[in-house]
Length: 328
Figure (tube, rainbow, N blue to C red):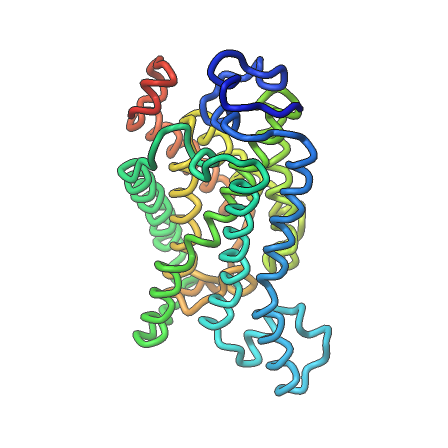
């Protein structure tokens, strides 16, 4: 991929973008898309994220030392939590890494690629907050509806563990800081890597598939993957990555994907948790047993329902020019 100056982008697309028509991907043409900058940028962002894990690592080391646990115990989150490590503190320290990660994304886009940070989200001149709020509400309602259905199917599988004091702290952390966690993953996978791979392969389809697989692989270290098995949880994470990537390409912006990811994780954080979850918190309800194989059909059905609703609400079936799409 060659460099692109601002004058050229308005007259003729470079070779690596010639077959791409999606305005979201083409918004990256506002900057330098040299392949080596994407390689270096991707690694630097991961570096920022790893540095951001330092507070959590120190906290776990101090806790393990005080409890007399060995070094191997630090990797067993379930053991750490059951040994008394504060769940709210663990959640916040975990999110700190994603906050630093977002900073890394901003630095790379701003100074490596020399383009506006907004081009990582949309080709429009500003964020569509109405779309963000609407998509968040729709997905949250769908998720809550499915969980209510599961509850009425097996009410004995749910334990009410509401504690007003601890939940208040959890709510503050979830509402004000959880979006950093979900936004980092969207900015990195559905934004930075999606645009970069689209230019590399000169097509959005390989980019969609690769980012979904990478998204699933990155989550393979989650506690629920260790508990239920890689091949049981891989379809869930890969499916979620495909859903978010497809929505981003179909809507020609990332607002809906940002909203969906935030709604999904915030619901899991505040309303329902289970042993072995990556978000094992002081949520209102705890599930005694979570059966991924039973949940999977409902999960994919909710994906289809969400896409169907979005197609009507956001007018995906309508043919429109990039200009009209950006103005929406």
